[in-house]
Length: 166
Image (tube, rainbow, N blue to C red; front, side, top):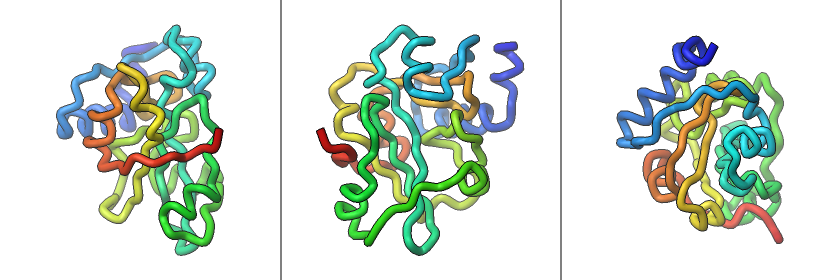
């Protein structure tokens, strides 16, 4: 099953994006689901804070905002909206995520999105910088890759930001 996961189109798209960006962590297929940060942390035997969850929100103009957050946090959409100069950020449904990113919920990767992403706003939780290794979804609920905060921020073009209140 793991080889079949690694051959799926979204996972191959993520692999190509990682290679193009010079990210060296190899994609791993796991027997256990990584659909939630808690599931990913358990499957990898790491702390939930080391999971870099890719969450999609919507600006008032309907454009997506990707927030790469620590699995230990719940994104404060009002805080983030103020920080990026928006009136608000809306939560989105699975159909919006799939149509904008090409990924299904639970496998949304921070790289390898379908379509033109030049206008995509990407933010990364500054608390992820406190970990030597972080893990992100690789295009499928059973696929992940290891990276560092610096590597992921550079590869995704993300701006570091506080995304949650304590």
